[in-house]
Image (cartoon, rainbow, N blue to C red; front, top):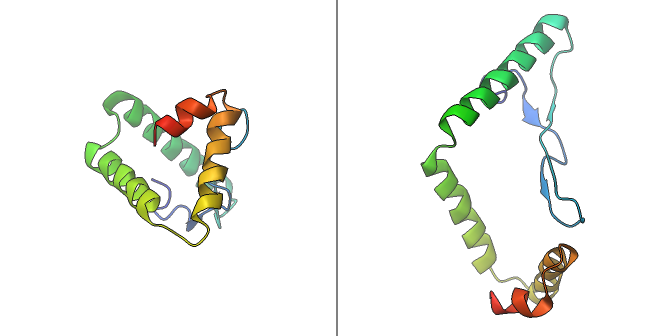
Length: 107
């Protein structure tokens, strides 16, 4: 909502989900906003309204399907360091207590 309304020109570095640690982290940040009181107030209101609307009606199923499709395509794209990437992805599940056997059998 902030990017589409042009209240913020871009996402901040580090925005996204990180499952590499024991405690999964999700963060969204923006950069390039004006720091005057009116703009900050508008940003806070926009965030609150967006969260309330999402809690009430949920996410657009088309956008969810598109995000899952992007993940699927990324998993199918083999790279020269594919084995290393598989090992790196496996460490995330092992960090969260999933056994190596269960993780590999899901492939």
